[in-house]
Amino acid sequence: QVQLVESGGGLVQPGGSLRLSCAASGRTFSTTAMGWFRQAPGKEREFVAAISGSGATSYTISVKGRFTISRDNAKNTVYLQMNSLKPEDTAVYYCAARSRAYPVSRNAHEYDYWGQGTQVTVSS
Image 1 (tube, helix red, strand yellow):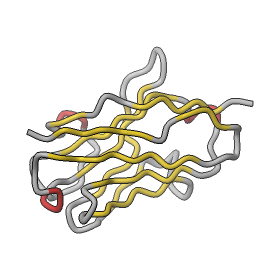
Image 2 (tube, rainbow, N blue to C red; image 1 turned 90 degrees about the vertical axis):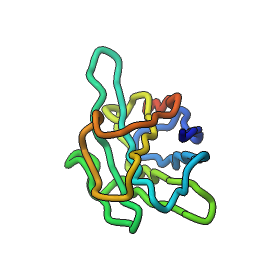
Image 3 (cartoon, rainbow, N blue to C red; image 1 turned 90 degrees about the horizontal axis):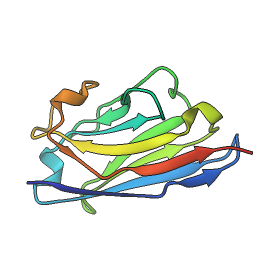
Image 4 (cartoon, rainbow, N blue to C red; image 1 turned 120 degrees about the horizontal axis):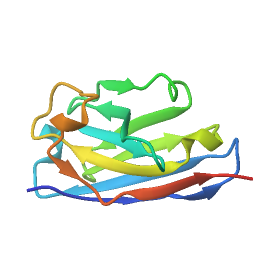
């Protein structure tokens, strides 16, 4: 079992920044591929970014160049640095973990564990 706890969400103005954190426990973190997904009201959950156990990354096109996913295996934590935020980035952001280190995946069905979500609201 893996437990995931997200933090760092909140209200930010357009053009602002936030950093989300996801603390993991219950499994050797370095052998766990991690991902961030988001779900806006009335929309399906969508892939945002993912990182493998060795640090290979993948991003959805709408956030590439603005968001950065990273991990600190010593702290069992994955981060999502979000810059140049737009109103369309408003959503509940979820951290997810796979039961394997590789490869990165954009498919929510390939993730085995999920956090409770953290709200990100981009509004003036």
